[in-house]
Length: 237
Image 1 (cartoon, rainbow, N blue to C red):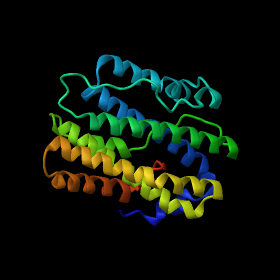
Image 2: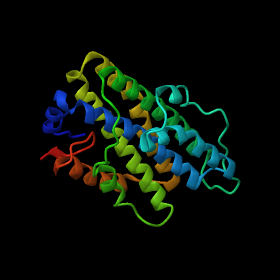
Image 3: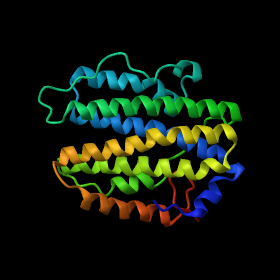
């Protein structure tokens, strides 16, 4: 994947560490939420849908309502109740299993970013999202199963871009952040593969044309000028 050097130059500046860490924190939450909403909509029974909402409540309270702290989030990334498919779901348990594992990992990463922020003395302040995810989602088809296929392909690109940016940025960061970023590469790469595998399963065939389409959209978002510096932003204006 192409990554402009201008973004890396901007991202490694010490004064940009707070926005990199806070945006990364919120990206982990949004990645988990996207997976949660996806299986709530398409795959799980009513009780499991409520369980998924409850699982996210402490994280959303912290991020959006400034309620709670590291102690109230500790150990909350695991879920004790099983998530069950609704009886009439055309989608496999594989979709649920892959997304639940992804959610666990994203919420654990959220907590790890919070630990680094505390260590570095970076207070949490909510910041608005950049244009990246919105720019990808605005190109989704509006009829099923194509909407779901597009959502899964977009999920793959977001994870792949995250993986690529962690790898690019790691050599320029403090040792603790660098090690953390390197530790994320394997899970981000697996998330990317899982999303593509699921998209192919749902499509029941070749998705390369749609993958290539979103590849062009994503490349344009990354390689064009962007006034709003974030973890997934384009070339800093």
